[in-house]
Length: 179
Image 1 (cartoon, rainbow, N blue to C red):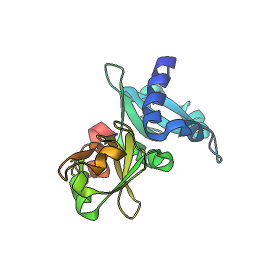
Image 2: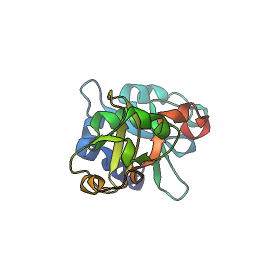
Image 3: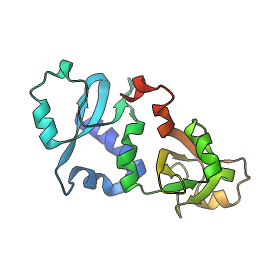
Image 4: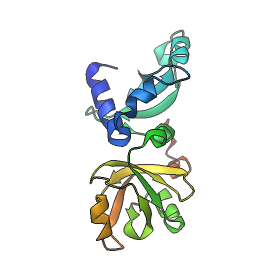
């Protein structure tokens, strides 16, 4: 990654995990890094796998590590649902949805106030949030449409979280965007 690409990537990750980016790189088991591969995709990969992948020509390398997302043609970074495991481990702000609202979210809809079970205290508006089921299973991620304080006065049909990605994307046939 170039310096500019690294900056854009870290800004996007910081929206969801804050200063925990350092924990992603300096893990206790092995150091990890971010690598740009085919189709402007960014992969999160251990250094041992990265060194082993150097023996394969870049045009022949389809994938290695975990795909975190890709850069658009305009230079913006878009997270993929495959990054959910890493985002959920270090998420700063979390939202739990009621069982009745899980399916709606998994079909790509926003989280409404009526489907909100819990939200992390002092979540600011437009912060990156990870959405969980009531049994603490990460379902996806999005952007807080309202801050924690504004959610209390919101009507039941108001948006609390704007949908960005969910685990239902695996089933809806969006493989071209994910992989």
